[in-house]
Amino acid sequence: MAWLLVFLTLIYLAVTLWADHGTTWGPILLLVLFLLSASSISLGNWVDRKTKLSLTPEGIQYRNGLRSVDLKWEDVQEVRVLESSFGQRVHVIGPAARFVFRTLGEVRVQGDLKGQLGFAQGTLILKEILATANLTKRVDSEKARYYSRP
Image (cartoon, rainbow, N blue to C red):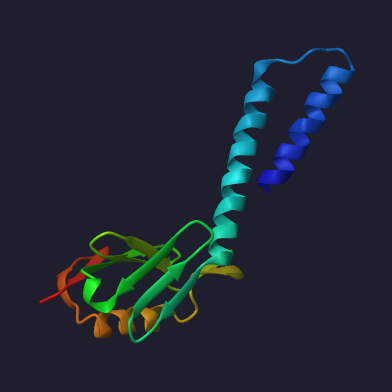
């Protein structure tokens, strides 16, 4: 949808320039805004598709198109689980690195399933991280849960 808005704004600008009506700054600013939005959305989708999370006997490996994090189990200091409208956001925090992943969430429009976000086995991954890293619940609120070492 965002790229469609970029395309339509470009057509509008081309037609007004071709017709020699000139153009105002409004459509140009809209074009820049739509272009930045579309690029940001595309980058986010690309990073999501490239994300890989591996749990090994030695630790956790997190990779996406922009970051690479390796945490040994004993280096996992804290896990924060934040509720969101599309699954849970899980923050895994180590001494020098951290990463975030999402448990499975569904995007519904008027009751129809339009898409899914996050890891299908996200809840199982979270439980495994908590158990293997030996983390216990410290704080539990309506919107967040915090786990750390005893």
